[in-house]
Image (cartoon, rainbow over all chains, first blue to last red; front, top):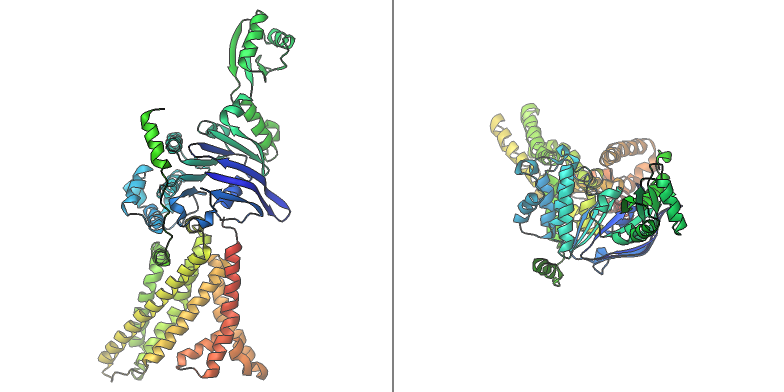
Length: 299
Length: 268
């Protein structure tokens, strides 16, 4: 369980994190979503005591991070997979973590096995690692203490599709066993597949949060028929406000059941009727990103 | 929900026993390990022995027969030590920032003072052991030198002398450590060390040579000058006072500033 309360971090006149409050609960994967520079990493650094907040506080398993006697056994952290001494071998980096936490030696081999780093790879210096291998090593360091809480900043970066699938399964089973997982990403689709709860942040502020189901539900319906125009008129007549897309599909915030009912009443045969799953969320996310993106028009 | 899932949930939900804290001995042994576990770290350590052997060989080959004394060996070995030991101390600290491994280190141990303390203990430990090794190599060199030249063996350094020389070298090492803590960047701290230990003393020496008023007070303000007295044997009361005051100015105060900055600075 991670509780963040009214967290604010200012750098001079710039507010990186602005009154952020949310909770990551046990047994659930919480996705922390926002464009680059939105304040995700700063928030996560504050959680583990690397950055001092201007105000507000964070509690992990009910305590301040610095009060944990042996944090590695309670919280697994991966903030930046590239932040490792390039001259150490992967095995050595894992051994330092194992010894710091006071764990038995065999845990190192178990973890290397768990993140699929071969004996040969583990013996190489980290400067020769690909980003994907660094991510695996970082995950191994986070998991070695068998913590109840995981805090991962962009863990899927640099992983190949199979690696992303592996990561997803690993985090899912972790949460299913009662663990708390908080992971950040700037990619909506990446996080949509795995998260139970979502927290959207932009310019340091939380713009939306809730369960994935709630947030997706709010996204509305996409519906099609042979003539989009007729369908739109019929729905408007039925009291549902709609937007007609250039591709002929009709979008609305009403739920699919009601849209189907109205169309049936108007005698229009539908060719497609589905929840807009995340389309609204994507819209919101793109709006957030628009300001920081060079391709402003694309949003 | 299957029975298996329920069982798994229960296993993680069972209240855990409070883990014990991380003892200082463990932290120190880890910091010590981190000084050796990269190629550059390993060779830096090995260079202590290598440099001592080379310096010893040079004395036997090139020094006049009458100069084949323990003092000559100790002096020759001392020169590379005053550079290598501070480098070791600097890199043990700055690596956490320059290599960004501090992100993990300070997350696993969220008490930066303890980590820096463990680094200081390991650095001083390495310094002391290095001096013992260096003196031993020097002693072997002296034996060899005497055998080769056929001169009488001359042991012209007492144990007290050796102790003072070791203290002077450890002080130089702490100087590097301080710069590492203060600057937190490997190239910056190394440049800083050369300014500190070569440029400042040279300027101070020039000033002392030309200005009488400074010549009289140099000991109070020039840490290199006052610590170099250690190489000449026992210090007088006033020389100790010089060492204390100049050490306060050049070592303790900047170290304190550095520690305060380390505690406050963001680790990125």
